[in-house]
Image 1 (cartoon, rainbow, N blue to C red):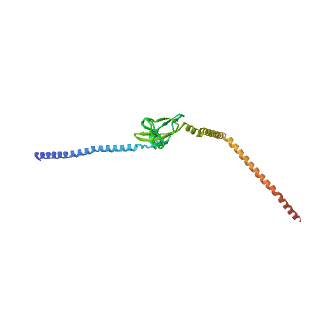
Image 2: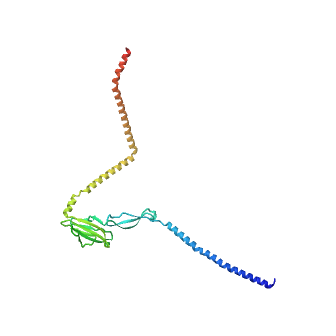
Image 3: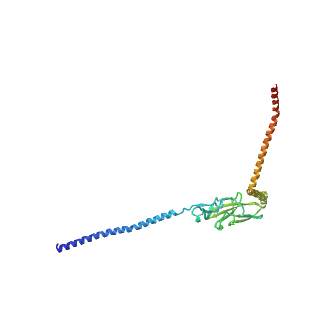
Length: 278
């Protein structure tokens, strides 16, 4: 083979090898890129799985509400957590919140009264200055008179005739509660106090008798438990004595019956003997 032909073949081989390498490089780069791009997809999947596990582990908290401290107006109540309490407790108090009932509270009672004056209180909760109070003097068949007192407490002096008052509790011009009071005269107060039965003495007497009976029953039970053997023997002796008495009475009854039947049977035997002799 001539040197020129050899050089042409070597140049052709070099050209084919270069083209082959140039075609492999893009394919190799694409594969590497594909492998590298799969990383974020796996990370996102793992993150989503982790969030799902966290959401599954989240404890569902159940809440219930306690009873309101009032049956009308505004009061307070407890918010109780029944699931997810710290320390594994079955229930725990989360907070105390405001609760409301019907606006009309009817007729109320004074917070204090004496022979000369009476103290009345509007429906409210702490803080007292949170609400606005409006006192009214009620008059039969007439429009009520709005008093100048705007505090939660009103002190009234007794007069020659009974008086009726009403207090409205407002918040942001919204009526929260209303309550009425009657201030009796001194004579009416004395009559009402004398007409009321003396329930305190009766209640104390009944409670005392009840306590004495309960203590007596407890002592009897303790005595029976401590001396159970003696009590059992005593009741056994009584039961055996009763059985003996019943047996004796039955024997006496049988003996009396046999004695009653004996005289009627003797003549019959005599008649039989006489007939045999004949």
